[in-house]
Image (cartoon, rainbow, N blue to C red; front, side, top):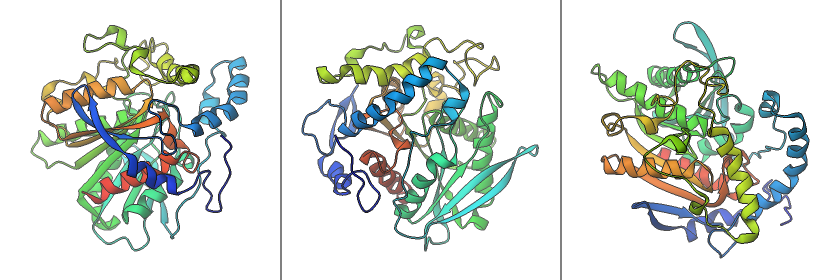
Length: 379
C-alpha cells in the first residue's frame, strides 16, 4: 500500500476515521462484551491493517541494522521511525512546568489546554509507554494536543524518571506524585479536582494501575477518591511469564490471521513476548533490578487480590488485535467484570502493539485520540 501525504498532513484520507466508527461492532471475548474497531478500508476480519504492512516494510532495514549490534538502550530511546503529525486546527496552549515529587526531586510536566477550555474542566493525566526505559514528550506531544482540542479540556503529560537510572518504584512515585500535584493545584490549573482521568499505554498502563492502588491506600485512611477513571492502551497489566501462571494459557491460536500475513503478525507479537518471557529475574529486568518481583501488584495489577481489584474506579481497556499483551488484558477484564468493576473492553482490529505512537500514519491513532477525548468529556 503506497502512502501519500494529504494536504492536511495525514498519510490517509481523514474520512477513514469516521468509517471506523460507522463500522464498529460488538462481540464477546471470554464472556465480556467487547467493542471491535475494524480496519476501515478492508472488508475482511482478522487481517493486518495495510498501513502496518507499509510501515514495517520501511522499518525492516533499520531493525536489520540494529540486530547486528544487539540490544542497546540508546536505540530504544532514539526511534526516528516513530513520526507523528500535528493534526490540530486550533491553538492548543502548552505550558511546561517543574513540579516537586516527594519533596526530594523535580520532574518536568507539559500541560496542554484547548483554546477556550472552560474553567473547572476535566483533565487527563497521560503516562507514556516505552518499557519503563524509553519514551518522552516528543513522541506524544501531538497526541496530547489533539486530545485536548477534541475534548475542549486539558491533558497533562509528566516526564517520569526512567529505568535503568531510576528503577522501581521511582516511575510509580513520579506518576502518582503528578496525580496528587494536579489534584492539589486544580484551581490554579483551572481543572476539576473531581474530574481526573489517568490514561497510559503499555508500561504507562502499568503505572496507571499502580496509581489507582496508591489512591486506594490513601482512601483507606478516609480520603476521597482522586482518580475517577482509567484508560489502559495495550496496557502492561500482566507482564508475568504466562508459563508460570494457573489463570490462563497463551498460544497463537488466539490470533487468527490470513495465512500470508502470519509471519508479519508473529514478528510483531514476538517482539513483546520475548521481552516478557524470562524477564522476571533481576539480572534481565531493567525496571525491577531486584527491588521487587513480578508478582507485586504495583508491577502487574493482574497479581492484585480480588479485594483490591473490586475497588477500582471505572476502567476502559483498549487492546490491539495482534499484541502479545491482549490475552492477559482480556482475562483481567473478565475478572474485573466478575468482581463488579465498571469495566469496558475495546479491540482495535488489524493493529499491533504501539500504533498510538504514529499519529497521522495510522488512522487508528487519530480515532483513539477521539476515543480518549470522548472518555474525558464523559467525566
